[in-house]
Image (cartoon, rainbow, N blue to C red; front, side, top):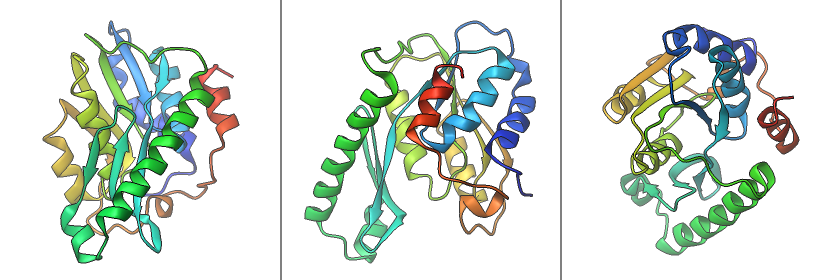
Amino acid sequence: MRFRDRREAGRLLAEKLSFLKDKENLLVLAIPRGGVVVGSEVAKALDAPLDVYITRKIGAPYNPELAIGAMASDGTLILDRSLASRLGVSEEYIQAQSAREREEIERRMRRYRGDQPSPDLEGKRVILVDDGIATGATIEATIDALQKTGLEELILAVPVGPRETIERLKRKVDRLICLHAPEIFWAVGSFYFTFDQTTDEEVVALLEGS
């Protein structure tokens, strides 16, 4: 299964989430940048507000696309210690990358939200959206952070992710919607015909409802 682009993936996800339309206290939280394009389609279809939750991957040395962990905007840090050990990643590297990603989270929060405070999630039914899952580190850090906020229900909705990772994440949320969970998985982008880089400007425009 391949999606034409992130917008199509979002529309297909929204169909699977249609049972939530008109539910009270519903909020779509998307992970920037690409997840916001998917999340905007979900929010539009469900007539729900859209916001962002910024989590940053901590990439391996010499292979930044390979996640050895992730940091959420509340400081929650998830690390794959086993993978880091196999790759010989030092504690100094992890600390330096964590500090760098924390700065990037703060920059993006200012860019996307300006002076607006983060949404109050207490009692909310939250749909967490991204454009896909690879190792699951980013999503896992996000889930762990969100579970501390007093939300009523957490629904993870993604177009694609490796079957093993999807099965693992199912145990961490109230409900998980995934359109395609293949056993053989290379990269999220390989399941899209168009997988262009999403810009900060696009994210801001989507959050403003443009």
